[in-house]
Image (cartoon, rainbow, N blue to C red; front, side, top):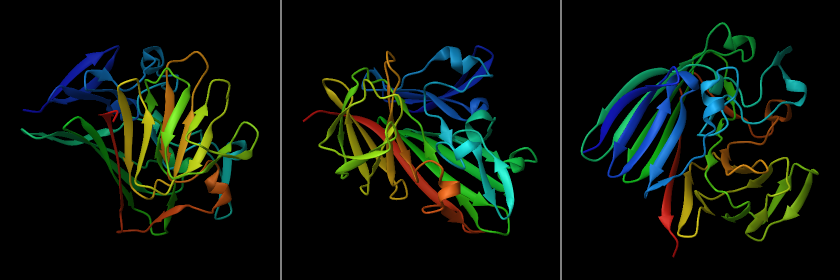
Length: 287
């Protein structure tokens, strides 16, 4: 039987989905971040708890939610309909509290829905009325993030959301199974060939792949591989790490950084036509 429980730690409230030996923890008040995902007896995610409990910091770890954009903007700003707006890296959602919208558990799964609404404050950076609903679903050792992006404004709403998972992968030589044959290296802005493996050890900035598949795999440890299933709208996979930290970020994004200025691959959400996307994460044994 799956179940949903709550606990408090460090002044924050957490909701745990658990069942069949797996669990996932979500902290709605810290940007609806997934702080832990445990399956096959292993902690899949890295988490720096100091950054989690210090509300003045961006959380280093877990699965931060990137909305309405992933990455950075040139000079931290963009222009829309003649007005210049400023927006922090990775958007609005990861630094603001979300509201619990529903939960359910039975013998097959557990799920939690959380919502994030526009406000007078968010409209200073993003001039649209919106509602985002994320449903975290745990089932058979798989964590699925179902997304619903609603535009409550009359004009079409541009977005390029993503996720920023910090996976507990100490090995910086990363093996990735993708349909990409090259990648963009943000360290020198060069496009480079890709043969399936990339050494991230000395890379301060990220690299990004254009991936057209619905599934990406990466080495997790000696016995398991990490699988990310994704909607086709997640056209990019970003890899990033920090030296001497036991993680590698493998991030599904819908567009590259600075897209509010580039405007080549924005997703437009029309009023009364919500956009539904999905990402799922799990481990599988190496063959």
